[in-house]
Length: 108
Ligand SMILES: [Zn+2]
Ligand SMILES: [Zn+2]
Image (tube, rainbow, N blue to C red; front, side, top):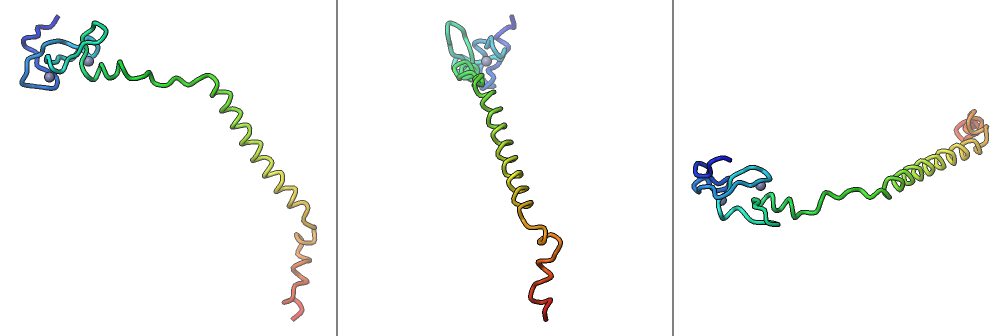
């Protein structure tokens, strides 16, 4: 155990440490340290202890995300497929320029 007398509060450099936080190992004065569940902890650590655990992703979201991705791919495929169908539906005359050739400026 480190001698508390020679330690200073982490927050107050002018104050002697009253306790060492067992969680982070820093020294704090009486004002900065608090008790939680019979243990002495500093304010930041108490906050961390009381804060809800980082939200664990429910297992449901994993397949749901896959479903969303599949749906996105399916929609994209349908759009591309529809576009392809639309393009093939256009008469071949449009592609070889016969439609353009018969436009008005050809007859000038
Ligand atoms: Zn602490
Ligand atoms: Zn302090």
